[in-house]
Image (cartoon, rainbow, N blue to C red; front, top):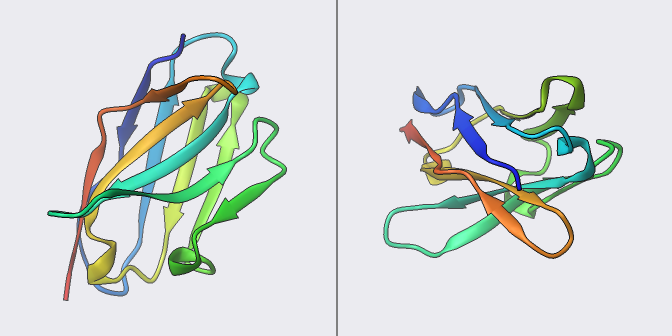
Length: 116
């Protein structure tokens, strides 16, 4: 099992940047792919981005391509989501998810609010 804690959320003006962190417990974090999801008020939770266990492969939903960047530091058991050029529609709770191929392990989320 792995436990995840997200941080780095907050209030930012449109056009600004935030960097979210996802810190994992457990010695095998480097074996997990990591996804980020977000849930805006009154909406379903949706996929944002994914990084492979090695960190070599990343995927993004079209809405964030070119603005968000995922990286990971397996030595520090941490994944980073750099978010630039933020828009009000990026406002949501952001969740980090570790995937071992059969099970998703969810963090509790961090709130991101982008004001116009």
